[in-house]
Length: 163
Image (cartoon, rainbow, N blue to C red; front, side):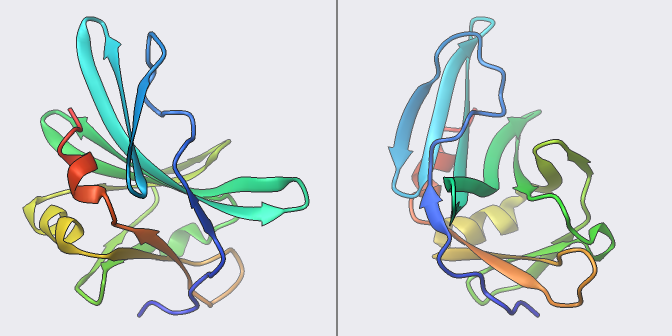
């Protein structure tokens, strides 16, 4: 069950794209989501993303990023969490008050820990119809689940541009 909602995390859209673009990408705002497109080897490649930030003594810093990519003609959502997680617990995703989807973490890199969700027709439809996605995870050495809330405002329009 999701609990312990983190509040006060500001939504921002601009963060370096995880797709390696050969030229300056074209950025389009879709409410709380950002579409990033560019020409890659003669083909337009687009992804969408949303970043949650938290304010500290140095200003706003990225806390969490969700991005959606097209991988072999299927949409995949990549979630980048901060380091310092209990990887054994995995993470959970819930759209509004609907079904919970669980996933383990794939790996941790310098930027954070990654989890991936294939956006099958059921999950994609829920995200397009929903208002928010709650993402639960546990920091290392605690039993308390923390929950981030990701806005789905603009998700439908942005997801239709991902190629």
